[in-house]
Image (cartoon, rainbow, N blue to C red; front, side, top):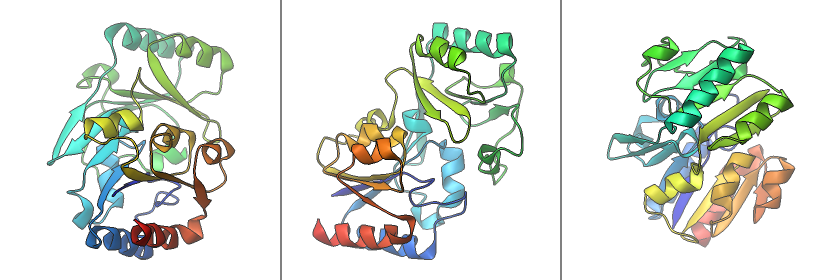
Length: 244
């Protein structure tokens, strides 16, 4: 069986690296013959620092499906030109602060006190460059809660994840989500167990053999087969590793 883990709010909390207990539970999965894959909203650049080095060779999906990582190589899905231009025009029109990811570097103009900045390139392996200097635009986070802006974005060929508690709109190319990233890795319906905590995990919940929601997101829980808490994540991993 394959075990798919979201990071933040699922097995990684307050931006800190995985706890020893969770690492032990994941190692137990591997020792039992299961494959472990990570699927996060973070780009691969920001996934690696919270994982022990022994996990760096695992396959991964980053940026909610934008980045696919295997065999130490990253495959990237970019925005179509018309959608990209429309988003850049919105940024300019409304002077929106943003985090825009390229293939590795990024462009950030948001508030450095925002939680998203805490998790941004913690090992300083990338550069914060001007938007026009990015090597492609593959993912955009806009710091806004404007309904008007959200409605305009939803008319474009993009996928939008709204994180109201963080006041952001997380934007990926159309048809790109965690399940599409997992499909690029060759996964099929009902051959994996998925752990997540938020609405951006629903796409993989819907195709999982078992889906476990960590925490109290009501929408995510409605799509999960079971739920658990932060304190019981490692225990749940161990139980499912034995059951499957």
